[in-house]
Image 1 (tube, rainbow, N blue to C red):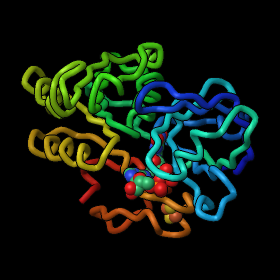
Image 2: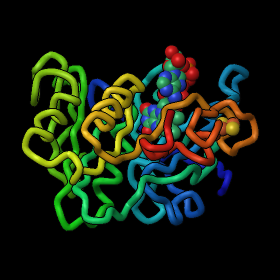
Image 3: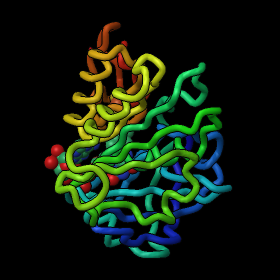
Image 4: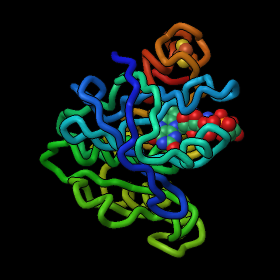
Length: 254
Ligand SMILES: Cc1cc2nc3c(=O)[nH]c(=O)nc-3n(C[C@H](O)[C@H](O)[C@H](O)COP(=O)(O)OP(=O)(O)OC[C@H]3O[C@@H](n4cnc5c(N)ncnc54)[C@H](O)[C@@H]3O)c2cc1C
Ligand code: FES
């Protein structure tokens, strides 16, 4: 784990929902796996001293990409940063998604801030059967430009709430379609996104006997297991989502 001052190479709007931040760092780009994250101090201002966690979206050599949404003050200030500005970033942090699956078809279920780590995973996996990447968003305006998904080794399907792109409805409607065609027990779900979405996915997994894992979206402060601000309840007691997660298996979570 390294704590580095990094210089922004690029920071731009990608579509109505996402911005892309690019910087370069040798230490922060070594041995990174999808699902891991960086804890970034956006600014030295008093109300922004607490770092914000962001998943690795793409790593190519020393070049690191982050895909983010504006949710509050920190991400608003981040979006105003320009080339040449600096940030402090701590990483790589956390437990990654399982990369090698034994004989199961991988199904990635993503929404909102959960899209970046699952696109990264879809780019890295070497599965025999092509994985499925199911993405849910509000409307066509939030659909990622095709170039962002070019390297994903997955079949990508979208669901939009208003039906302006892909299937109309929530992303779980795509999962429902899938389990009508395929044996749910042959699927392995990996999900990241809004808590309500992940809860719905896990409920379906429970009902149909699907294994899987979820990257839990807990508010974080230290990112290194010291403040206990990010604990989640598991069947083995409380665990820190920054060190023992953010990826947990469905069977572990309460
Ligand atoms: C492991 C992990 C990986 C993440 N990866 C990404 C990523 O790749 N891209 C991305 O855009 N975001 C990601 N996030 C979410 C990101 O950390 C928050 O959007 C960010 O901290 C918000 O900071 P802010 O100062 O803009 O908002 P704040 O002012 O802190 O909060 C504004 C609003 O957003 C809500 N909020 C804040 N943090 C979160 C959160 N973690 N989850 C849900 N709601 C939140 C608050 O409740 C509040 O309503 C990740 C979070 C975690 C835990
Ligand atoms: S963020 Fe401090 S313990 Fe996880």
